[in-house]
Image 1 (tube, protein in one colour):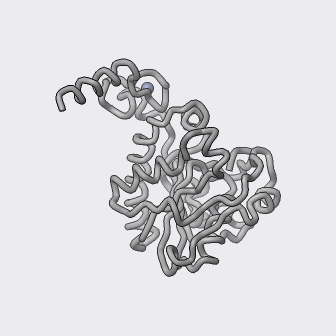
Image 2 (cartoon, protein in one colour):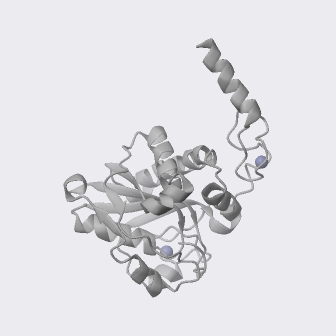
Length: 248
Ligand SMILES: [Zn+2]
Ligand SMILES: [Zn+2]
């Protein structure tokens, strides 16, 4: 036992946890984010779109301009940060092996999710379902960033994590710079849900970024097809109105 504690201390010294904002070893050590960096990512607050949860510059509107012109498959969703304020962290999390950021992201997502469930969604969720990665991409990256966050959220909230009910059957092309309809076509038949597992269940889909909603809608469509009762989503970051030229 003592040896194991020493080994983990040594691990912390050799590989100190890095801060999701500045990417340097967290100061003070033992925290998930530097005290100095904590206020830098811009939180979603004030008036938000009743559908996707984007911030509304005009506090009198109910829906953002993106949702006003589209009918989403999912029921409702929310995010923690604006995409532009945390895009560097998300990039390193996905492509530079910074798995350790997941703990900070999950803690923040869990807090916002619990607030939204109580005040906006008004449901009792049965499970958290991460947006799956195709096995070939999973092999390349070594982990599914959404599943890491979902596992962390599950730990904090007690909502069961189900990684097995939704699978990615097609390795879709990257959607950066694709239009809304191209994204929808690209994702057609990309997911498969198991009817036995999701029947009549209230599900929160977990992902890193929400841009146009094409990915969440494709997951929701398949979950509904398999018999789910309600599909909501929770993402770490969300774009601002009219901003569709990012990863979905
Ligand atoms: Zn920092
Ligand atoms: Zn919206």
